[in-house]
Image (cartoon, rainbow over all chains, first blue to last red; front, side, top):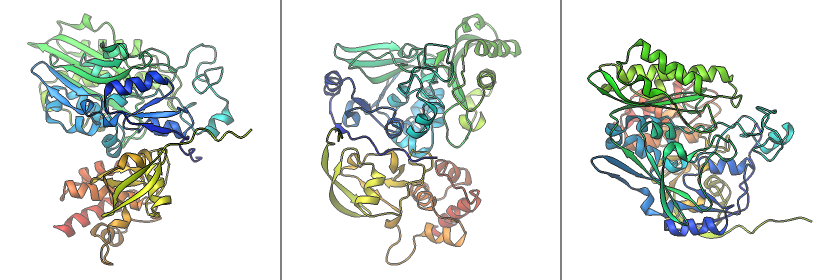
Length: 339
Length: 163
């Protein structure tokens, strides 16, 4: 292993309002937004980007609030992951969100990392997340300034995988993302924050920043399961979030989202066909098949792509089975530890 | 021609370091771990992986253990930072240092300052932790020598010593 570079020379811009942060981004689109820094500072030291300045938004108090109403939970983009993991209101209303927050990295990272930062996490690939020395020895790829994707040299796009844990939970829970930009604020469904392109996976326009998340309380049961190489803390080989509602014993809502397999967190299509049915073996098998068919893992981790496809499908089956079990409300314990 | 790049911003940082307030000029791009080691001369805090993966640089900021290699020094303005050097008092080892010594929780010792600071953060929150709580609190701290058994025993011994 070679040592990372020192941080590139840069300066900090420290706005105290959303408007000032947006203005700083408009003034220079190359500036990067700094929240917890657990992803960005490492990427800076790996030489993956070299912004002239960091816009440190942690002084914007408005973005650090959790507000609950009967039908929604509003979570500011700067709310830290350890707070999401410990907040009893989040745990009782949005189990998948709590389980996803707990599954991110290690306790020290979660004390720094924010929900907005985890949503905007850079995509990852074994050819990119290396030292500058390693990348220079191997030759640059599409994402690091070269001409070719080493994962799929015949293709024209970057296949770096989205590896955030919180996004699939929010997609399953049907959350909306609030975005502030030069034209004011807008909202998008969480899945629509992303493109299937590893170099530019975020659908944010120039000057825009993520300011808040709104999670509806309409879906009662949810959970998140994650598999990773190093269980104590690691990015996902695959992670699956499911939110569902049952009436009687029959499914009346079902949303499945997967991370770690594509360049974006993927909302699985076709789950409506399973509504009206009990969560039995045939429904579990159907959910497993939906996931296996739709995810597109590529050779972006040390583990083979096919293995990650199998893992994602198996996690979906296991999680849906657990949510459908009579004692689902009692919880499955620590999500990361059971995957 | 050599291009020195843009001049980094600099600011006065006022922090409470191991109980004493101090002021230093720090560059905007200075990491907390580099501030502690190079400016304050506190080399007990280790640089291991340098990328947030090993926990050897763990220090307490306002009683919470965080990796100092993932924190800009400038963002600790007005806050309390504690390092391994701040634990022993009056020539006596801190309870965790004593326990790591007696229970053989340190072998090569490189991860030990981070382990002890992460454990100290835990004991301040939870004075009587279970083994599972200890392992969860130390999940971000890697050790290549001990296999962790002796480290967990050391933290338990320190908690018991405090009871």
